[in-house]
Image (cartoon, rainbow over all chains, first blue to last red; front, side):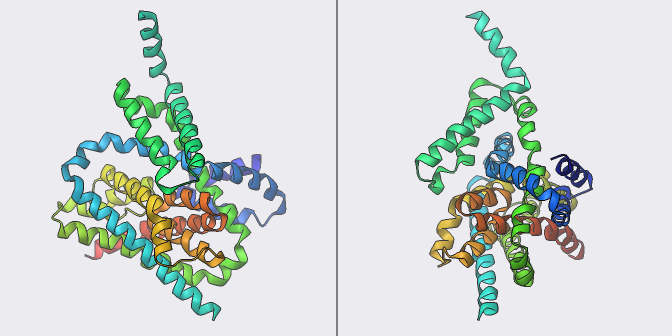
Length: 103
Length: 241
């Protein structure tokens, strides 16, 4: 547990995509069998509650309602359509490429 | 009665309020979500946010006061992203085999999501700084803010876009991908999760994780890739233009 904590804090202390660097460090650390069990317990716990962690940021959107209502519907249309496009294209590219390697 | 009011004033000003309110509301939303057989529209994040936002408006508690308590939950986001390394490690052989396909899908998918948002925004006549703030919308909110700041967008707006994008993806992702014929076998879940993580970052990943463990793992990978690619490439593209 402690080794995980240390690793987490070290990962988080690095500049810019800190947590992502932490994730890469964790992948390296997992080569060492001793850390695997505590990591599995911790990661399982954190990830099963991942949705909860986004609630505070979500509530923060409320503070920008002024900005949103200014452009309102147009902005929402843009976001919804581009998100769908992103989803569809990613899925299509990945499926095509995976299909090729399997065949 | 005045005693009760005093007590309320005291309680609502302490960090404990934000923390307790968030946890209680989320537990209720989660219970309702389970009750409704995890229907996409019953997404616990969405309903928790709506309930809490209404609660804050009704009680007149401002966001900074709420956040002083909720920050303890918010802080865990960092370690949670680190924890996404675990499901990836469990699938390391598969990843080594498919890394080029995954990387290309992340690159194309991310570019289409951000690019189409900017193009649509421009067509609809949104102001320049709003259009620019749309570019990093498929990256998780804190990183999106940093990128928007670098390329002349509005960080707060970029965070809002990112959160709404995540919600849209979480709400409609499974339905849309099902419509496109993405199956529910192992490869299907892989594609499913990866698309959600690419287009709808953490909120999409959280949803993917609830639906299927494989989908969750690939969503985590996709969101990590998106953070790295977007923070390197978006500022670069803007400098070239």
